[in-house]
Amino acid sequence: MKEKLYEMTSIYDPDLSEEGLDEEISKFKDLLKKFNGRFAKNDIWGKRKFVYPIKKKSEGWYVTYYFLGEPDLPASLNEQLKLNEKLLRFLIVRSNEKIQLPETSEATAETPSQ
Image 1 (cartoon, rainbow, N blue to C red):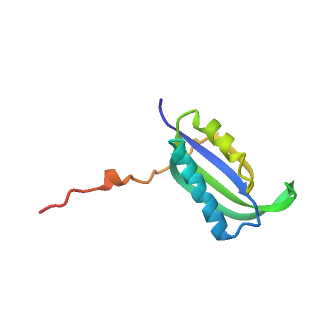
Image 2: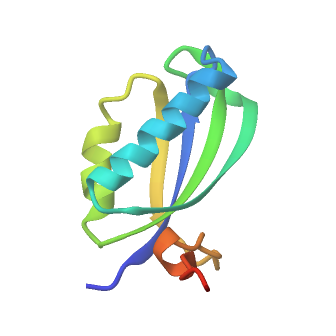
């Protein structure tokens, strides 16, 4: 099956430090690898206030991820992400955005000339 591009907007607990947020982003990348997804990029929007409280919080860290995967990837991620207590909300949708994927190390490796 052909890989599809997905976008996930997520809201993390505002009590996380910037280092804690970086750790959560790393955990998400590891989770993607576990389910054979490929990370494309992420955008950190920073802390934003909510219009209404979510899990008794009035603000949260907003992060948007872009990744590639098989059509069953979002369902697999959903099950795992629901277990993360630091993740207040998330939504995964198919993306129509054009993303420049980072080149893999295999594609950029050159043979040394002698």
